[in-house]
Picture (cartoon, rainbow, N blue to C red):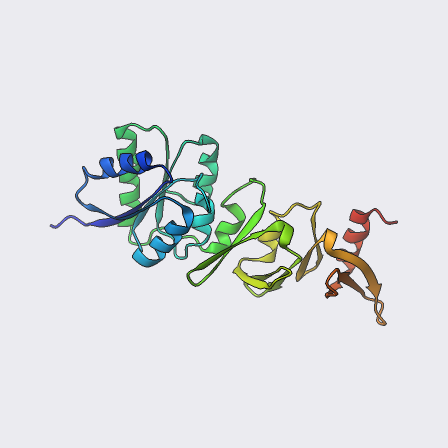
Amino acid sequence: MTERTYTALIVDDEDLARAVVREHLAAHPEFTVLAECANGFDAVKAVSERKPDLVFLDIQMPKLDGFEVLELLDPQPVVIFVTAYDQHALRAFDVHAVDYLLKPFAADRFEEALQRAKARLDQGSPTRLHATELSGSARGDWPLDRIVVKDGAKVTLIPLAKLDYVQAQDDYVLLKTPEKGHLKQQTLASLEQRLDPKRFLRIHRSFIIQLDRLVRLEQTETESWVAVLQDGTRLPVSKSGYARLRETLGQD
């Protein structure tokens, strides 16, 4: 019986780290390395184009970190994290990485991780998380200072300081900046969990605003409330949202 073959991608910003993984994989002719990437942007492009079975993925990288890379991949390949930062281990397993290699690692530890990856792949239906699931868990309690959005082959980084408001649109959110709106496949609730409540507030089931964009609240003829933002945008405010606003703004 012919042994199954697999394809792999190695992602790390350090040349030596990529070489170490490549050297260990050389002992496994059933694996073919499709490409190596030195940053997150290249990794997203390579995974989308080459569709590897397995990705060895560093976490701390320039441009996009490993968790942001995962968030942009749908469907998910099987992933082994390779990093020097062991505090990320729990988060790695939260996003269903098959294993976690802490640099520097021994050959036997690499073999163990590789066997786990092969077992996952041989199941026939590897766990592949959807981007909306990853968004809530991928980076755990890391401070969120930007949001990554993928539109076709284009990846956009949106600093939170540029975000005016967020609107729920079915399984997507519209991220509104002064320049334009960006659609991201994610739920409003999962994004809300990762935003700083001192800066962002949910004013309605469909809207979260950045508080420093709020100019005033206006009452309508029907006695409902509207939030008026700096650019003139008017957004509905629910009763619970109004109560949260008054509490947050320190109004009686």
